[in-house]
Length: 355
Image 1 (cartoon, rainbow, N blue to C red):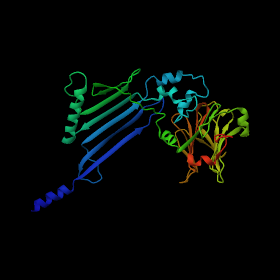
Image 2: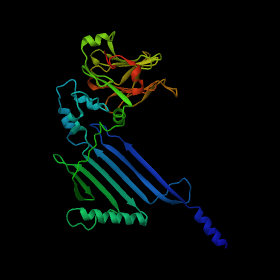
Image 3: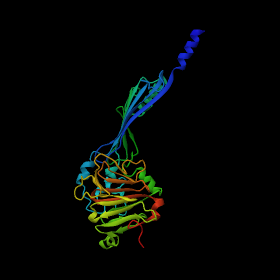
């Protein structure tokens, strides 16, 4: 009787645990692919809150743009200053009017996906499912394939074939052609994009002399129009004209920089001809080098007015915490403003429709 109680006690000490770890690296246009690596470990352990060692599933997933993208981008000259290739540096790019997304979609559409799964000491029921999956896939692979060894690992490569509507899928060396194109546009399928499409975000953008207002009207920005909104060596793109203003965006002459107000504070970013400049002027009191950092103001407060940083594609990003607006200033002097639509009625300036 005593040994029976001891046996029950030892069973109760076994705890079923599952642990998941992963490392995520987002795709950066012209620099690196999307990558997700990690592992899942599950099983019984005698120590609570301690991960078991096996069974284990390791995974590595990545997708990338075509190999020719960088070469074509470097050589590309659209000869249209209102639709330059630099528009692709912003996310999402401020396409509008005659500058449509389809002009650049071959450069921003994913054509390759790779996935690798490695299994170690899986339970018998999962092993049985993998055996059945192996038989099913082997049956549709052209040629006589007895097994693809999917109980040990699964390697998948998917490629969209150029000048074809087919997708080539390789699974552990076996090839299947799927009569449909795998489609994912890394620039247009973004969380910002869906919020814009559903009307939660309004966008105002300035590309050379073409201004797109919050209401999607396109305005040719002549010197006479600029002069109506001129303040010294800049002109007003947009401002919060409510009783408690939270934002104002001024564009410096020749679009060589921006001056952004958030509440009672402001920053000036003026890279000029130096595209590698990463310094912002905060309130004319300090210069902040933004290389590899995210700066918030006030720097030590839990509740701050704004955050500013240079993203991986060389675009200045200012996140206004007072009204949720995001201001982007990119190469070629492109300015893009994302504003929660609920604040649109409070705004004045060029981004608001002119009578």
